Image (cartoon, rainbow, N blue to C red; front, side, top):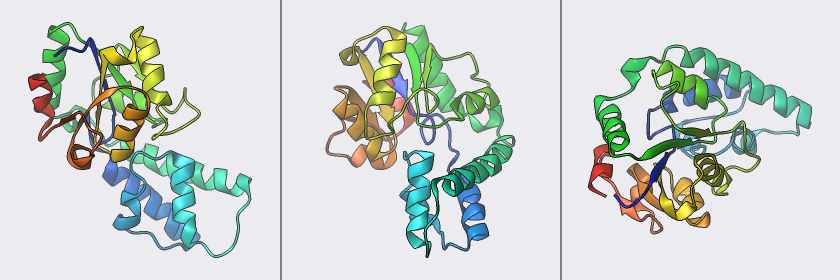
Length: 210
């Protein structure tokens, strides 16, 4: 691999928290009396919390002030954080851990580039609390993907130029963000089908073949 560092999205790449997000948003939407299903949930992948709320509120009849929206987002996040306590090192697959360890042994720097504000907590639950060289997440960015800010900050934290870093994503919005920031990208799942992806992957360990 020609790159000096690899920047990973968290949800859907290092681990999967989709089911917890879905349960939490569904509970919040039910409390509000708004219809919500898995098809709508798929639109929320890689999108910030407040933008996700706006998508859900498309079906809400009436208007809500910003303060109420903030409370709804907080309600969802509190439910989500409680669910995350169920996560453990068992949620980190052997394939992902072995691939990360191999990249590290090759001298690559490893970073997280996630819009989640819970990234550090999730990493702790997975047993990866101090594993990465840098973490750029929802606590240090003001714009979510497809804006490249989260990846640009990760590269800055690593002290490397964008051209020296590979971004790994599972969402097309993340691949677009990488492209917008001047990064080469590797895509899993739907991201592998993006016309902008540099390296489509079938499985996480395919990273070792780049």
